[in-house]
Amino acid sequence: MEKIRLNAPLSKEAAEKLRAGDTCLISGVIYTARDAAHKRLCELVEKGEALPFPIEDSVIYFVGPSPAKPGAVIGSAGPTTSYRMDAYSPILLRLGHRGMIGKGARSREVIEAMKENKAVYFGAIGGCGALLAKCIKKSEIIAYEDLGAEAIRRLEVEDFPVTVVIDTLGNNLYELRENVSSVR
Amino acid sequence: MREISAGLISETIARLCIEANIKLPEDIKCALECGENREEYPVAKEIISCIRENYSIAEGTNVPICQDTGMAIIFLELGQEVHITGGDLYTAINEGVRKGYGEGYLRKSVVRDPLRRVNTGDNTPAVIHTDIVPGDKLKITVAPKGFGSENMSKIAMLKPSDGEQGVKDFIVSAVEAAGPNPCPPIVIGVGIGGSFESCALMAKKALMRPVDESNPDPYYADMEKELLERINALGIGPQGFGGKTTALGLNIIAAPTHIAGLPAAVNISCHVTRHKTEVL
Image 1 (cartoon, chains in turn purple, yellow):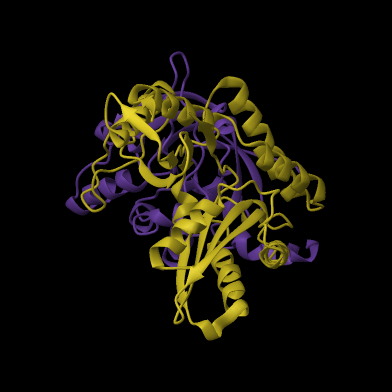
Image 2: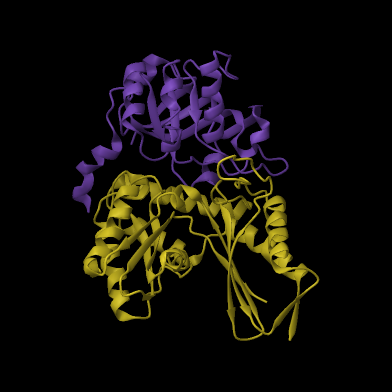
């Protein structure tokens, strides 16, 4: 299967071309955030304060990596389950946040916000943190160091492998898989 | 009385925490290999291939298989003729967890309070389950448990009239509801009977049994086989992208229960179902 090369930050135009089921390799700058960081980001939005990274066209990776060994860029770094971010993602999507990388199902509210704001939800393979970490070339904590694994990191990635799970039209690979149930 | 020092217990726990997080048990590796061979759908085949490559990289480079290095669940079988010296048992265990998660560069994933949510910074405290048994040995099992899958677990207080069919349907519906969230292919621990809390604990203990071993009671061994087939026919597949390999194994533990009750618990675990045991 031909893999689509994408740059992060991700433009609206590039996002709109993607379809559920496409496999992609992302290169560029992405940010990590999971439960606690999302809560803080949304509190900043509510107060009208600046976010710690440019949100427009941003790609956020839902991950809390394990600590880097001496000399390593990062530890194990696979995706966490995305539905726990469902309460927060629409708030960020309305600000132009373009791509989310995680695993698992999303809520109707998130999918509606994705359609309205032309955003994409990517899946990375859960439980493959050692493999995925190889695509992370640089990692730097830029906010909320007190959160430990949950701090926001700026990552530079090269050919980070993902699958488009939900596209800008709301097509959902988890529902499309009904089509492949003939394989059982 | 045989003496075992608290220091030895700490050292052992620390080592088991690291080893369990880096090296996947052989039974899971075999089940993944079988899954990859059985899959015809290319997407499913490729995902399992990545999963297998991942655990090889982890083992080869001493990096955790998954970034969620879990809450440290500790099972103890403490011989009643053992005397712990030089400190108390549970402090020694938590000291071992602190050391293992620190020295092993494992993720610290525990918050002190469920609602105020401040990370303890060292992955303590562990969840400790102790059985007192005959003899003068201490058997320690460390099972780091990730919560992506733990969150998909369920318990039901069914009625006796729900019977075997009710229990089976509950188990399958729990897996179906979990869908892609717990990182399939999953491993499923089932508790049937007992009381509310013991049923959940049986489900957890069922995850400690290798997936290639059946329940010793043929009645439950058949049920395990039937449920695994039903679950793998759901079509969820690796990562929820479709396929035949939704679960690698399903283990049941059953126990006596009350005349009014039929508790059933499903503890879901991901393809990184880790546990390591040592006997002192």
